[in-house]
Length: 225
Image (cartoon, rainbow, N blue to C red; front, side, top):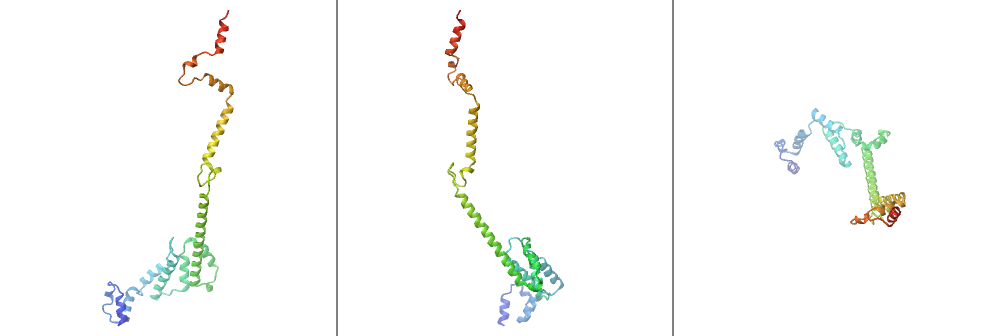
């Protein structure tokens, strides 16, 4: 009676309607199994469809996925459907993500006599461990690269993250200086002197109209008899 009481205690209110006429553990268990594990064609077809169409989704945990496959296989066995060890690991391999294709290809050449569920599960866990290790190494390398990049000091702008030889502003400034020097060389000396002589200064327009000493001498020679 104690086992019967414990069984009834762990049932939800919705299940009590199925065992209201049961007075022992055996009768109660058979009633519950008759409802949830009915050995009908429809139930078998439903579970078979789930079993053979299970697919691992991106981001799913490998342990959770393996347990899902095993639970459905156990449910099929409970309704007297013959599920072999080979069926279980075949479904496991078929349900993996495309990123595991290389592992599946390496296992295809092995004999079925050397393979069982435990072997496949161990290989899957080993593959997941290798991938996590590679991801950790890549993250560490990226962090080190970022740290080294931040240690760079530009002696031109006094900022971190780059060197003076890669500083774009410095290159532009040097290019402008070169262009100015080229313009100075291309301009003749007499042209610059002429510009300085004839160009009036701002605010002193009258002084620009005053004739020079040379002009006065020339005018005096022209007016002399």
